[in-house]
Length: 271
Image (cartoon, rainbow, N blue to C red; front, side, top):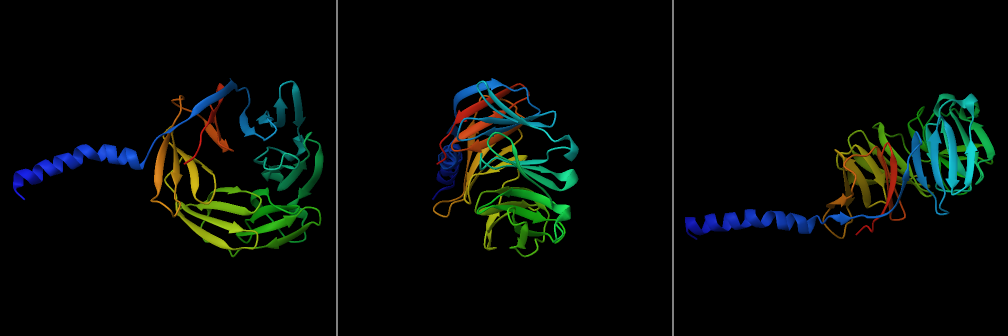
């Protein structure tokens, strides 16, 4: 092949590169379905019954239309973590007092647990609802993941000690997901089996969808990454109207964008 032919081929490849990149990393068009004014300090998301959840002045509330329910507990300090997976058993965690409160669907208190009084010492740094009347717990004292039965007041450790600090975590009923300080992504099931899920992209905020997909923000741009084994890892930009936002939340194909003034809901279908 002549030098001229090589140069022509090189320029053709350079010209085609953006098209190839676009084909491998398609953009996701989000369809706006609703928006509302945001008056909360922190908007937490929506459940399958259409109720919205938020925190204002350290008061936890849920609302839909004219229906409003509130819960506040001044004696326990600031609410530091919530879990809305089960709208019939909502988890509120108060880190200052190492205490969790479980609420029913009208935000009445079901039970209150002070982990500092437990027979097995527990300092909770991660918490979430699990199965069979249990809570996921990451115990900072032994750096292990465990399960706490809130009916029996029994705690059992299920994982080996983690070697790196947790940067981000999420739970579902059967799985405790976490990302460490080196952006390594892991999962632990209720039997203590730990699986390495790879290394995540650098992120400002992140929402784990499942063991193969997550949505993350970086520099006020939103992306979905798919690391499924069936195809090469794909990062797709999610196109939304907002040029900047404070946070986002994803559940059941609904992407909620939170700004200082608005809550905007988009419908997206992940590949």
